[in-house]
Image (cartoon, rainbow, N blue to C red; front, side, top):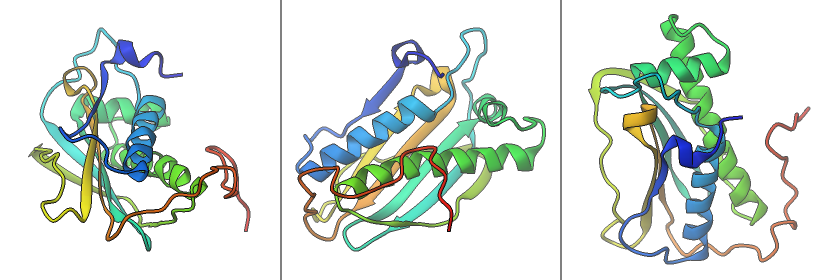
Length: 193
């Protein structure tokens, strides 16, 4: 639906070090897939650049991993997210809610990838913030070696949307060998309780 990622200028920023564990590789791949599949494509005839003015953040925590996922958007990027969600881009509350929902979808994809390999985390409710200009910085492994930082970006000059995942593992994460062992709902499946 969102087109070929090469046309969108999608890039996955990886810190200078190589992934040091299967969990790091799994996480980087999951973030990249989620950005490619879920972040709306920019139209070539619309300038989406500009200061990042809205952010949605979701925390997650489990026995093996904890951290946050964030999305930051320029005004045109936020409007595009709102339109993709089917809400009025001129309604600030609806537009920010749609950014929070997009963050929820992205972190949900990452959580499903982890759960299929036996790593479980619970999610917080999305928090959305507004600002005059927001700077997303960082992209380095923690100095004490107990965590990692991964950032995935859709090219801000073209899309006006940044996505990042900051995660920390208190110890080495052991993944299940076969991702079919854990029964996890697929994206889009409805669950009834």
